[in-house]
Amino acid sequence: MSMYCNQCQEAARGVACNVSGVCGKNATVSNLQDLLIYALQGVAEVVRRADIDVNSIPEVNTVVLSSLFTTITNANFDDESIAKSIDAVIAHRDALLAQHPLSDLSDAVSFHAASRAEKEEKAAVVGYLSIEDEDIRSLRITVILGLKGIAAYGAHALHLGSFSDEVMSFVYEALESTNNDNLTVDDLVALVLKTGEYGVKVMALLDQANTGKYGHPEITEVNIGVRNRPAILVSGHDLADLEQLLEQTAATGVDVYTHSEMLPAHYYPAFKKYDNFIGNYGNAWWKQVTEFDSFNGPILFTTNCIVPPKKESVRNRIFTTGATGYPGCTHIVADENGHKDFQAIIDLAKTLPSPQEIETGSIIGGFAHNQVIALADKVVDAVKTGAIKKFFVMAGCDGRMKSREYYTDFAQALPSDTVILTAGCAKYRYNKLDLGDIGGIPRVLDAGQCNDSYSLVVIALKLKEVFGLEDINDLPIAFNIAWYEQKAVIVLLALLYLGVKNIHLGPTLPAFLSPNVANVIIEKFGLAGINSVEEDIKVFLEA
Ligand code: FSO
Ligand code: SF4
Image (cartoon, rainbow, N blue to C red):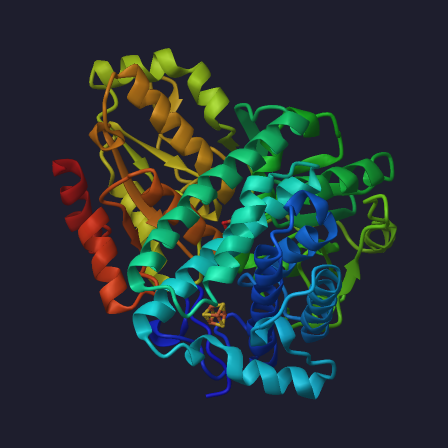
C-alpha cells in the first residue's frame, strides 16, 4: 500500500484510495498531507500544554487554518507546496517551544524532517493506519475531516478580517485530542458532536463576514450565456479573491464569469456594480474537464475543486491562489497588505478568444436566510393553506459518479407541492430543470455555497419559531443531502449537533465510518443512505 486516504465520497471501492487517488492525488501528496496533519497536531499540543492565548499568535493561526484547508479534497496537488507547509508548521512549532519550554515532548512535538527523503520516511509511519483500533481511527478521522471543513470556512472568514478565538481554540483542542491515545471511544464520540457545534459557529462567523462586507444575498437572475469579449473564469468559494479580481478587471475590456461554487457571488449586492461581471459559465466542478476547454480564457481557482488538467493547453491557462495549487500552474500569493496581483491573468485573457457559448438563458438564486425571512409571510401562508406540503433540504456537493443522477431524478419526481432548499454545488443536478413555482415561490430555492447551508438552518429555526414548535424535527422539512468532500462533513456534523434527525446521506455513506461508528450514528440520529427514488419519496412523504 503506498497511501491511505478515505476522506471523500469517491474513495476507491468505497473503502480508501491506496495506490493513487480517484481524484488524481498521488501517493507522495497524500502522504505529505498526512505528515502535515501530524505536524499540526504537534503545534496544537504546544499551544494547549503551554496555555498560549490564541489571540497572541495570529501568524500561527493563519498557517494552521491554511494548512488544514490545503489538505481538503481537490484543493492542492502540488507536493512542493505541501512540503513547504510542513516546514512552516514545524518552524512555528519550534518558535513557540523556544518561548514556552516544555518537557516530556511527544513525537509530534519533537520530530524534524528537513529533507524530502526524511519527510517521506516520516510520512510513511504517521498516517491513519498507524491507529490500530478501527473505531478509534474512524472517530479521529471524522473529527479531523470536520476540522478541515471548519478550517476552510474559518480561512474564508479570516480573509475578510473575521476571526473567532473560540473557534480557533477548538481547532487546537481537537487537533491535540486526535493524537491523544488516552481518549476512549466515548470521549471521541463527544468530540465529534463538539466538532459539529463549532461547525455551526464557524458557518455563522463566515455568514456574518460575507454579509457584513457584501450585503445580504437577494433574489437574482444569473445569466448563463456569454458575450463576445475576452474573459476570466473564477472558481472556488473565496469572495475576497473575487472582489480583488473584479476591481482589477474593471475597465480593462476583460469580462469575469463564475464557475461552480462561485455562482452565488452574483446574489450579493456588492458585486452587482461591476458591469464586466457577466454571469455563470457551466456547471458543477467535475464538468470543468470539458467546460474549461470551451471557455477559452484563463481560469482562477480560489479554492477547490480542481480536477487535474490533462491538456497542456488548459493547464497553461490555470492559475491558483490561497490554499490551492497544481504543479506547473502559476500560483498567485498576496503581498504583505493582502493585495493579490492578477495582472498576469488579465494580460493572458486579452490574448485568448472569448468564451464559446454552451447554453443560454438564466437561473435564479439568492434565497439565503435574510431573503427567505423577508418572504416569511408568503411561505408560512403557503404552508398553512397546504400549497406547500413539504420542504426538502438537498444541500451539499455534486460529484462524478453516475449514481448521482439519483438527485436529478429525485428532484423531478417530487410532488409539485414540495419545495427544494439547496446550497452547495449539489444544486447543479436540478437547478436548470423547469420545476415551476408555488404562488410565485420557485420550487428550487438556492441559498448559495455549501457554507450557506447555515442559511438553511437559520430558515428552519425561524419556521420552527413561527409555527411555535418545540423540535426542529416536527417541521415539514426532510433532509436528503449529497456529500463529496470535507466541507460537507462539517455541514453534516453541524446538522447532527443541532439535533436534526433522519438525514438521508448519499450517494454512499462515508468510507471513514467504521461499522460500529456508523451504527451509533444510525441509531442515535436515524442517519440513512439512499435507495431508489420511488422508495425514498414514499419514506419521506410518509414521515
Ligand atoms: Fe462543491 Fe468542491 Fe462547496 Fe466542496 S466545489 S465539492 S463541499 O469543494 O465545497 O460544494
Ligand atoms: Fe481518494 Fe477522495 Fe482521498 Fe482523493 S480525496 S485520494 S478520491 S479518498
